[in-house]
Length: 255
Length: 275
Ligand SMILES: Nc1ncnc2c1ncn2[C@@H]1O[C@H](COP(=O)(O)OP(=O)(O)O)[C@@H](O)[C@H]1O
Ligand SMILES: [Mg+2]
Image (cartoon, rainbow over all chains, first blue to last red; front, side):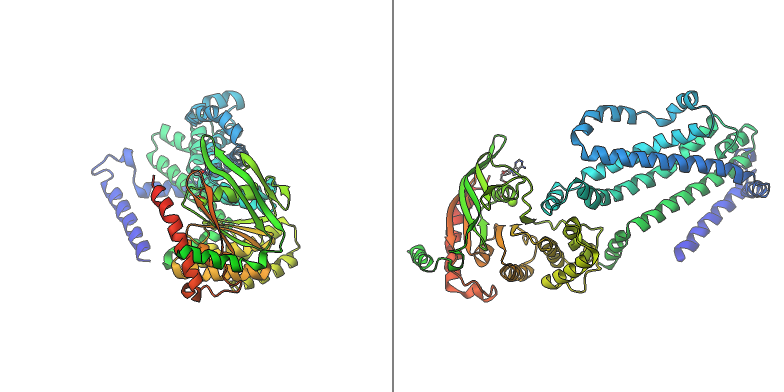
């Protein structure tokens, strides 16, 4: 509680100083003011503009996120269990991984046009690698001794996968998913900034091109809000899927 | 001089309860190499049904390797390992394996951990519930079924792993230094439990340890290994009663003599084994 109040205090002090400094210490067209930003945001809320653009961005980010996560998990699980195949493909995967994925945007525009598909696929490509690498690591970290013990109990490959590999990889999968949230936003927003006439990224670059600093900040506030919501969603999902983690935390506190 | 006396005693009362039983596991001139490294050399050994065998020796002398071959995880480089008269194939499902690490599935509760082999055997939900309750009772974990492993103490985790091991009723139990990480008091308690449960369920046991007291206290027969590559230097019959109180056994004269003899046996190889 004290923590919460302190944080609120810090935020208020920051906003207060910003309001004061704008036009006095720093020119107003550079940093706008919190009150102007709030006014712009309010206006966008009233005319529904923010919902329209945020909706587009949310669809891109979430669809790309789900697609990338699904493919990443699947391939991570398969390669994690197929050691030889993983070794064979390793240099290709690493070469592909080392490309800054945003640099693929121009190519994706040629391939998929400037519609929503291009942003979804760009986002999915970025998310794929994070989820894939984490899932792969999770599968590889499963103890061979444990797998042997299961085998002696009569488990077949499917039992091993379902009872051991998947559940022990899930912690890693969620690490990958959590890391992916801001990158999913990057994929969607940058895609929109490069080529689009809708979405939060468009709103952002449009405001910027008109030197509407308050508009730029208002768009950023919307982006931050969406990121936080997505993060919360993933954390919630993690908590539901991994009830045993709660037992662990309780133990840590109790010692 | 003292050793001779023990020998005589051993000869007189050599483990009568296993004498008539048929042979279950047999190592025939078994050697195992990992690349250039020979881990085990020319081991021949016969384990009878219902026998509690301990394997003792300095670390790195191939004790775990022998267990792995019994389970079919490794094939011997030379010689044969047979189980019930048949050469061991990969994943010998007649055995259950318990190692120093308990390998519980930390995302499952105690009851659901014990249920794993039962799920694999495709038992019905009701059957699983009944069997799990029975096992919880057997290992003294009644009331802890809904806890996660992370909420348990080290000893309780061992009990849970033991219950899971017993759940699918393997004929032979392989233990690889299962209690090495426990403190002395807890270890004694678990040793007593193991003896009680194994006698009750009439299991055959191969129990690896580097603790000489443990090797004598638990065993019907104790196999002493030496060196690298590991070879059997001696097989000791332990003429202690089948029903034994591991707590008071420390004062038993036979027990004291046997452990003393093991100490003498192991001392030179321990001194040489430093490398
Ligand atoms: N899977 C393996 N691959 C290579 N070397 C191994 C393997 N398992 C055991 N060894 C080697 O074989 C020797 C005996 O090991 P181990 O059977 O574990 O001994 P112990 O259990 O008696 O301590 C050691 O030198 C060990 O390094
Ligand atoms: Mg070992």
